[in-house]
Every structure is written in structure tokens, then in C-alpha cells.
Image 1 (tube, one colour):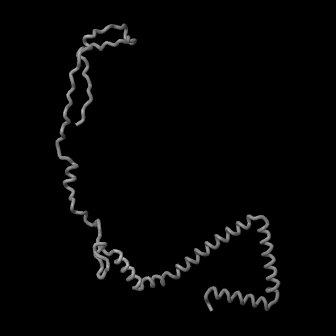
Image 2: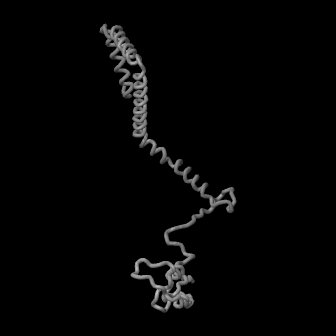
Image 3: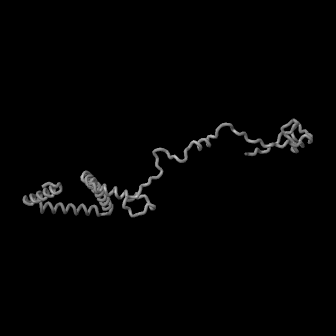
Length: 197
């Protein structure tokens, strides 16, 4: 129960209490009698808090909620009995790990994993090649950018490339027999790459 703070009642006389400081707002300062200010107020007795009528909503909610019945459809714990032939005693666990391992072994042994691998092998191989080509191009572009930022290296590499192309052209593309051999070699490499005979 909370206590109310003490608040004295005003004196019964309509006259204000005596103040030793002069009042500046009034028309003329007057001296008030001291007898009226010395009266003591009646003591205040604390009032008991009223009791509200009606049911307590918290007590009703606690009384209505069943403590032993869980919500339907929600399982707090799930226990798996140990497998037959398990070497572990029943007190250590319910055999969940062995059950999981057995399900994985059955799934692998059923051949479904191999069938899925055969079905997705082509697209996965294509995706892997695409990712590899993108990574190779990124590395190649960063390497060329780094070499190009070095002074004189870009110009020297262009000169080396020009010399190599000129030398290949004069040695392999001038005569007709050399050209036919080069084109036959390129077509063989292309058919090997495509996988056709």
C-alpha cells in the first residue's frame, strides 16, 4: 500500500501568514497578527487503497492455460529408439546418428545419386567451364593491365608480337604446301576440340 505525502491544510483564517519580507506588489505593507499563523493543522491519516471489484485477468489467464498439455502439432522433443543390434547402451542416446547414417547409406546404395549425377553432369560441366573461362579472362586482364602500367613493357611486347607474326607468315604461309599443312593442322585441332572425327 502506498503512502500519501503529508500535505498540511491551510489555516482556517482567511488572512495570509505573516511574512518578514515586505511585499512590493501591494498598495501598502501591513503587519498581520501572528496568532492565526501559529495554529497547527490536523494530522493526515493515510487512506487504504480501494479494492477493485471484478475478476483478476492475470489470475484467470494462468488458471485457464493447461500446464501439462502442449499445443497440438508442436513437439518439444523427439526421441528415436536405438537401432536393433546397436552396441551403445540405451542410456547414452536414442540412436539418431546411426539412423541418419543408415538413411544416407540407403540413399547412396539406391543408385539415385548416380542417376542425378548422370542427369546434371552436362550442365554442371558447362557451368564449370564457363566459370573457369571467366576467372581466366579476369586474371589475364589484370596481368595485361599490370604489364601495361610498367614503362616500355607494352611497346616491347607489341614489337615481339609483330616479329613473331612476320616470322610465322614468311616460314609457314608463303608456299602452297606449307599453307595446306597449316590449314590441315588447324582443322584437325578444331575437330579434336569439338570431339568429332
